[in-house]
Length: 228
Image (cartoon, rainbow, N blue to C red; front, side):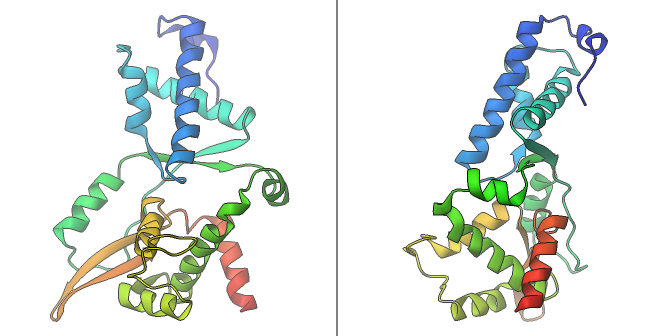
């Protein structure tokens, strides 16, 4: 929600300065989203855009980020959504590496989601050259969904190999390095991974993360699975 003039006056900066800061945050979000294939943007990065210019007002970063959120919606048609980190379903002991990964991931972060109707988005926005990459995302999420929301790494690769996707393939015509493409889904927060220690050693699991659990995407996956 946009702040009132009374809210803005507390920061002792001009309207032009405020608009410039908001514009820089919006540009950063749009550029970083395109550059990093939709990976979440940490709130800390947006805050540093403001504090790095020697603005020291404590609440100014939150004010500017909220203004940017409002304008992204009203002008660009994007919802700026804060991701809530989901927790793993298992109670087993985690490796130190995973604990470190999770502590970093727990920091506030954002993604932007188009508010256009699906047909309009496909017609005017969606990049046809990336449709097969999107298909890979959908297939991986569907496999894990059918497995109950969580799957061992070897089992996931077993299913992917049946589709002609191999973990040691580094020059796939669409995905390039297939293993890195899968890791990209972790970075984009469609998946999260966990290493579980057992009597026969450790096993890596993939589990659906926040973006894969989004209501709209979840409905599409359920419809796809029911048709299959």
